[in-house]
Length: 143
Image (cartoon, rainbow, N blue to C red; front, side, top):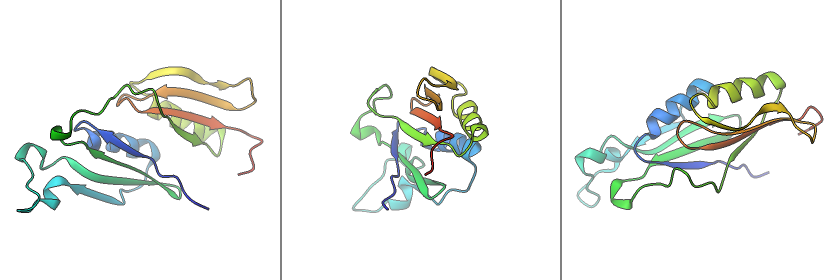
């Protein structure tokens, strides 16, 4: 079966955001590359972009959460896109609570973590970096 690995764009704070995500999910980064790691005569990197993240990956179960900083020359990333959310299916109610309270810290809660009308434990929110998340624990899910 295929895996879905979300990839996020940041405006220069990818490393800060991923250290925050690592504090919630745990684990070690699978890869961190900075723009200076690719610098060459053919691909010059401005000094102010050199330490920004070109690629970062955090394993979460069998999946990867990945990101990069968008170079200023490419414009800013829309941090209020309202088009997509990262959906997490928690393995337990306790895991759902840990992820919700960790990831939503400093963010905006759209739907608090509570029993939903469809029978699961569910929440929706935007984290302090503008990324939208949904967390769901369904005790009847046999995935």
